[in-house]
Image 1 (spheres, rainbow, N blue to C red):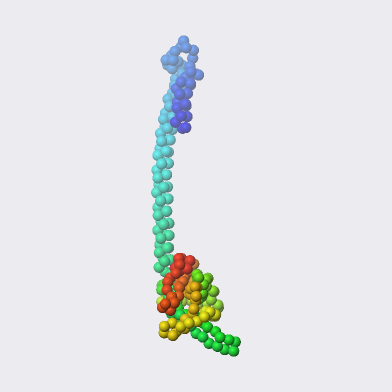
Image 2 (image 1 turned 30 degrees about the vertical axis):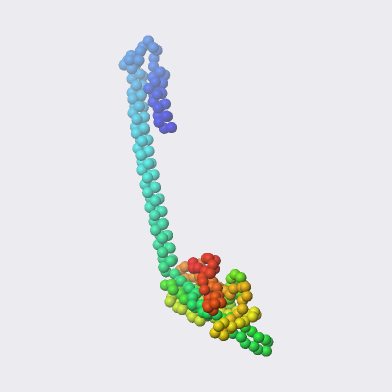
Length: 253
């Protein structure tokens, strides 16, 4: 657009302006320029105008070059800023992964069955013990814990631990701390048999016995951590095996 406007202006200066101010045709253009002061100054004005057009066109080119260089510099600065942001994000993620707590539920014991009677009747309990450890570099603060034994064709959502439970009443687990022998049990109303060693075992029929623990926790600087472990009882060995299921049942985050 700017070059088109300059071209139109130049055509007008060189051809239109002389036609406006030129005298009658009998005088001639040379006579008009050499003998008439208006013709001389008009021609001088044409030269000055042409020079201004050239200078203006040259300035436009310089401005265009400057703008291109500015765009290149701005793009380079944007790329550098993005690279810095990515590096900062990577550093933050690395810090969050290293300087954070890591809780694990492990050492789930074999199943034991206890029977007893009182004035209210006969009771059978299925018992298991497990451990919780913090293998991270900073303390873990338990926000919520769900642990249960369940008998069904698939694991049932574990119940939330009550306030008197040790994981809830003492929710801070120091780095390297291991809490062993935490007990979980389930009242069993079904039949009971014996294994080859005469140990009591529940007769589950077509169902399965599950151990499922979910612990949500945080650190002093990080949050939204969770550990899950879901195990299935093996009646042949008396131990819980697994982990069972996908990320919804077992895993870390």
